[in-house]
Image 1 (tube, rainbow, N blue to C red):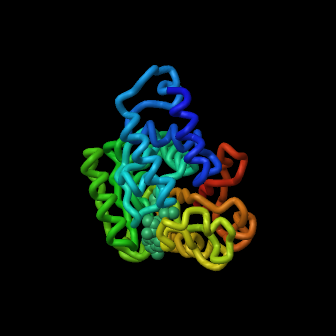
Image 2: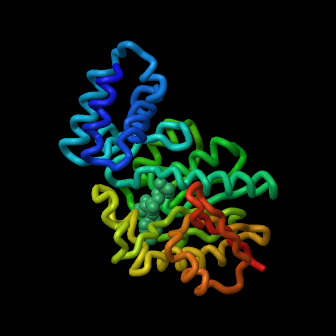
Length: 266
Ligand SMILES: C[S@@+](CC[C@H](N)C(=O)[O-])C[C@H]1O[C@@H](n2cnc3c(N)ncnc32)[C@H](O)[C@@H]1O
């Protein structure tokens, strides 16, 4: 098994700088087993299927989540398609920040803007079944995936096709979003070419759509309301210079980068 694992890692290194992490991710998502566990086995029935996924991944360069149609977020499986962003580990910080505020302030309503596969809204609704939960996306195809995920996770979320919050009145206790925040000239732009541009590009600097969302959200917040938004750490200082009338807190991710912004009205 050890030589088979080394061979698969070597093959994956042609398409990713983190082949071990990716193999572990494939194993957990598709077979419910970690790489550490697989290393302890003499033999495993999953090997032919695992080899097939790695082979297709290396041949096509397409992220394995789009090949299999499934991705892992906070240890749970979600459907994905090329119409949605592949869930990122950084977004866990947004979910944990939202959970903390919901618990501490007994928040009752939530809207997730740009829900994509629905991971944020669905994870929070699962944790807080009494939370009135809405989710918007401009992409009809993304919403189809999010609705499938709500059924998969047996939660009741209202999905609306909408440009940011323009079709909703509020007030909401919590407005959360992981919006597109890559700039048009950002080198990060080419990071995963298979992902939809509408899920990645937030304007020339990257934060333009986020600012529009924050200004719309300010008109739709309840008195005790909060906005939580995932931000691009490279331009967050510049972005903050464009905001006034809010209290703002920045939260760092596991790499020490400012990744989540919490705003409330003063
Ligand atoms: C970075 S992805 C985040 C998806 C998901 N929330 C996640 O965290 O994986 C941004 C999402 O915003 C959606 N989007 C882009 N522009 C939008 C707009 N003007 N109004 C609503 N949604 C938008 C995209 O379709 C995409 O699904």
